[in-house]
Length: 449
Image (cartoon, rainbow, N blue to C red; front, side, top):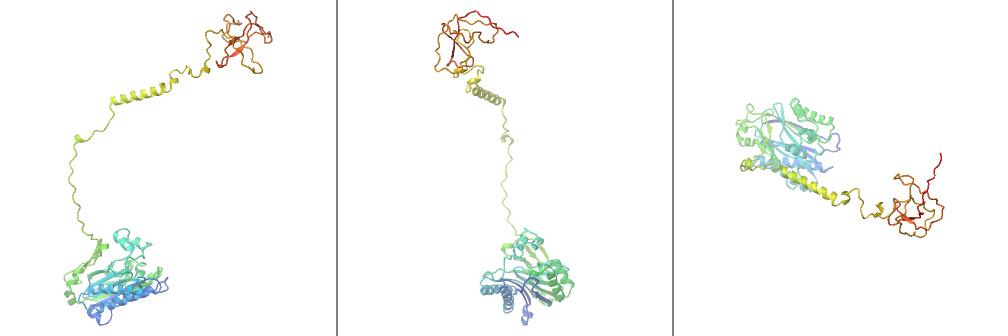
């Protein structure tokens, strides 16, 4: 297999130190165990991130090339686990790094990934992300909560959910696909793919020489702010070893990669052919493949309801309406004429209020004109004497209206006993005694106009 590659890392425009690191396999082990490219993005603050990324690159490369086991995919996985153990022991869980590696071995591409550093495959003018982002927004995109465009501007886009060094153990994602002549592989940290789109990465990597393409991608990220460290590796497959390709058909069976249990909702499938030749191989595709779910048990059949069993709507019968009207009328009658008896005879007065009665006793004489009241109230209650039945006060006219008495107020009191007359508006319990004379015919005085 003939492979060309170019790599570069840059501090960016806003950081004062570079926490990214990368490495490429060298020496005699490359011809025997394949070409291994690694990119790490350290975290943990000043110095700690640099140490974590450096330890990650060194440990992955040394652990892979020092192990001569025939299963190179398992060796790559154990190299990542060894790097996690070493970083965790050095930093005691206070520092960590992302890690993405691409292994070119016997016509196959094997990608290992922890964190949000990415691996891309560019084939036939198309770009496809091979790795999986272990970040909060990456999990949301995989679950369909947000879109990829929304993830680029999300406030939590830098929050990762998996890294090397933070936990004693780590789970590594592995991806496998057959290579074709002309394939281009891009490894980069989030300082690049966070500012440059996938389409732009693919267009630049296809249209320019490798070294120029790496420089252009880093310059473009810096032009857009350079908010993070930027690391990029671009590798191009010039030639495949046919003998090695046909000998490793077992690796071609690993073209379907299922994500770990927390993210099993998606599956990446890369087409494989028996001959694995560029002429018949197809470009990689990505599609969703949800896990099969057992169908729920069918509900028991429900019998159709009998119309005769359906209750008719309740309506008030005319007999019930009549009874309700009668009861309501009786209730009103009892309330008005029993609870409030004064309503029965509104013209009569209650016997409990005797002072409102103005009817004189039948044994009393017709009412006579009363004398004007004295200027001072009497000191003692006047005596009430029986009234002579034969006494009467003549009136000047038969009109029913009351006329003033013609008797002079200054005349001496006669010897006849005074009569009691009822004054309208006065209480019967406190009658007013007025003196009268013996009935003498008098002539009413008249005033000449």
